[in-house]
Length: 311
Length: 271
Image (cartoon, chains in turn orange, brown):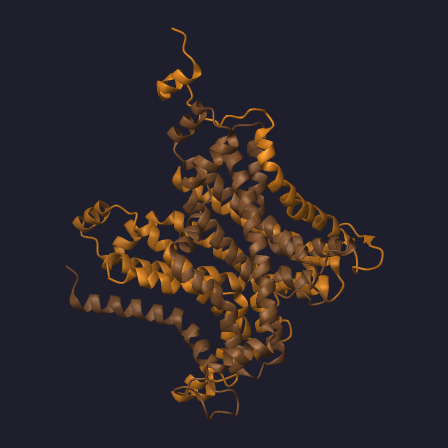
């Protein structure tokens, strides 16, 4: 009996490599025709600009006159210019508020809620996720009104007799950056909590039973069972929120404009300011490329860790 | 099994964090309904819903909302169609170069807008395309297609093999297989893609900010940022405008929240 490829596939994994059924393609070109429209737009408005950004980053250009080739000088500037180095340092501070804090809160909250099996979890999920869907410009305006000199926060402080703590939060050289960071915490905590809760709900109940039989309390149960089981979700949460922290632009643009001084300037804001306000297009492109490389690197590192965990 | 006091603590915690998430939203809502400056007199039960009308008119939001809706319709429909076609090729066909091309698309999910917006502005200005809908929509279509292709590929890959085999045996053309067999099954995935793309497009700030330097084509969030510049001191008016800008996505979210949550959680779990 001659065995056709289809029959071989029917025999199961032992009978050779099972191939996914492929849609009838009348011509070898068919798949490429389906790809063509997407590739055309994607190539022209994503890949090409990305290559152009790399090219621009090697020039000194004010956006109008002739550009001068300067090699890697713009990248050197990223490493040496104190103002730019400060903006990258601010991004690191934001990562604490956007990523570390939400993951810690989300883990605590998730562990308690998962253990307790409380009612109303569905409504809770809807509410805590809500900050994710609101335009950041709106978020920024809401929080400006909270942080304003005569805003909600100061009114509350005065009402409880802590007048001396009241201050224009976003105008404070030291406190403006953490104040903006806490907005990020507010936005990201819900997403992270929902993500971790979803991961925890997939942990088989037997794991907890056997941990309890071993006499583990809630704390040991958390570190021995829950935490290792949601490593994958933690990795995803960190990737998403770190990228969000590095891409913070709207929030800074609307709340502080990088000020007071440059105490809240961040790389993405510097890209905008240099390219469209200061006429330093090359420098802006170099910062953007460094930012892109940082995001790629974080993704790569996090995925590597994820692969090792699951192996 | 769980003590009553512990149960109470759990509910307190649930309540506390829900209140933290809702707090700023309730604050801006109450600011939006507060009296404007001096005319504290008349109102409805002490509330001033008239602020929304004032904000809408003074901020010229009818024109900016229209721009936002137009951009959203273009970006959402174009990127959905392109993503379905590309995802179909990647998810169901085997062809040389598919892997490399797919990785090229994945790359786009990670590239920040900051990186493409600088060269795009100067190149589009050179060909006279800035201050047009195309300059605002096309870069966002490219961004959405990156995620959409990834999303639709995963959906088509998980569609049943029996279905595909039956279609192949039937001799259905690849186009018919997609439209009458696969797409109906993939409808939930398409809905998720559409609501996510709508949210991203509606809330996008940097691209419309840069691409329309003369301010002819302001989207609603952008108009709100400029409105703030003119009305910093008028808390009530500004809050009302902010609520109006956030509202469309929030309404869609309240009806289709499963799609939002599923898309943002699963879409981030890369293979």
